[in-house]
Length: 349
Image 1 (cartoon, rainbow, N blue to C red):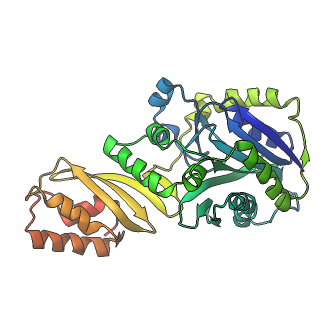
Image 2 (cartoon, rainbow, N blue to C red; image 1 turned 135 degrees about the vertical axis):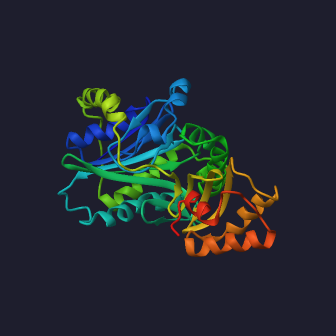
Image 3 (tube, rainbow, N blue to C red; image 1 turned 120 degrees about the vertical axis):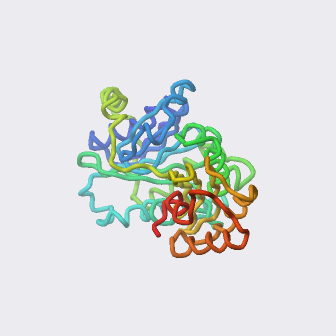
């Protein structure tokens, strides 16, 4: 197998390259960073529902759909992407898809360890620190006869830019995403106090991937790769491909495995109820409730939010807590009952 260290490529090319090489039968490791920022969405996502396309256009941030799964993310030169490409029949890889992520995550886990950052792979597709903060997200998929695995080393990360490019129902929810992301997503700079040089990280990554994949022979980009990337870019940026619809309606943003921010709303008789929940391991870690309904006493809403924190998202647990709180505080909310809150939280009774 080969390795290509491509340094920084213009925006979309950093993602187009593995799509082209997979179609060309290349087998090996690619290291690359985008020279300019871009937004990348997963193959199964709805671009208009996930990303604020108007903002990205005004800010000059290209948006590209990739042919592997995962969520919407912000890419820039502070990330080093590792892209492993191999033929689906290559015996070097595990046979089961579920085993491939852990197998190929060994290299970045050991690379982080060389810099004093203890990490481990956490299913389905995260690398996390000892404290449980995500420090790399990964994705994979089949492209023609090839299998592709991609991930990124986070030297640093622009939390604000990532939060701003997402499509959200309101600014309050955007603030919630930013706060949750800062708490659950970390970088080499945050862990070490400063980011190491990219070339230092790249050197160690190659060494670690060789332990997994076998000897990697340095290669140059095949001459017809650029023309293949140009051909693919026309399709990837077409309205037909970028704006393809999927049946899944997004209900929130996954921060890392086991942690997500969910938003939902419900129109009760007494008015519209909006909710934003930070959910960790199926428990409501934090929640905000808003809307155009009426509640007496006026300060009772914050108490209700507090009552729902650290409770598992089950109607059988949440509903009695809401009703006990209403009784204890003598709360009135005309036209809004406990079952309405469950619907607004997208929880079954």
